[in-house]
Image (cartoon, rainbow, N blue to C red; front, side, top):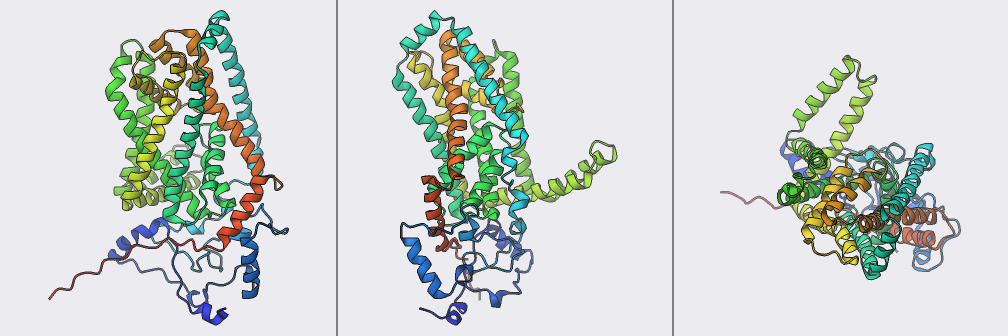
Length: 487
């Protein structure tokens, strides 16, 4: 076994960060490379200050099925040591992380991740109450619109095999979401378990459903990624990149369905198509803003500062300075995310293609449900377009899961397409259960299991934490092309 001196002299690899993609640009602009004053002291040292012999024992424990009794599962950093830039310790690969364009490593978990009490706040209980109320109202609509005998007729004619196919489709939708996250994760932090990514995905779907505008999903995903061993300064850029690609792909998808089916509905459903146009405009402007930020950052920052300071002077904002600091921080993070994707076109294309397939699966679910009732006369693309329009309307409704707006627009569109109120009522219930209530049920169960140290799922996570603790998570950097010598 190598001595400590031998270990200390070994070269240390630099971990990959989103801003690593911009190192060349910074060098071209004359930005000096970051210097670590403690570079001589950084070494690939045993974790937790253990001796080499202790590490041997720990490795044997990691390879066995037995879980150490003293593991504090509530703190995954016991194994992973996710640390901030202010710490004097080194990350897993043994090197401190310095970012050129934006130092995300200075963020601590408490700054960006809600604590456990936040998850049980009064606001979340109110949101859950709204979800329960929406479910009761949906049941009421089902029995009122179904008109008893017609509802029984629709049920008796339903082919239950299509119900199973629809269930598989929502599971595939979750799986493809995990694939997208794993593709990005592999570019930043090597060795994170795909099983853990699946868990975080479903938990994120749960919090998306019970918070307005899906605002609770990403913070809670960042929290659970950190608990499962992915440092926050990787989780946050990863989630941001995923958000950007999803919005970009959805905008492209919306352009396609609007071109091919907007006029089909406009004549008879003009008022609701105005809502579709509003939803599309919101997503399009967001993507346009992100690309403007990527290519004209200084101009966007100046305009933002001017707007916020003006709002503060005329009394619209009470704490303009605090708001400005928060907005500037968000813009810096968004800039890093979009520039990272532009510097990694392969990753952008792969995630976009998977997202396009994911959206197609999601929007096709209604066609499968109606096929179960024997209603396949209308073409497939019309049903997919209806579902995409429903998504655009729901995207700007500030209620958990867009309750009311999602169901209402679904009923309007498909009553127009199929004209059978009882079948539409039953299909609304099936669709809404799979896309809204099932994620809540499954996500809540997984959240409880993850937080129960005695559950088999928590025990498996502890084993995987140990596995990850003895891995090198640094992503190999692309080799720089040497300039050709000129005479």
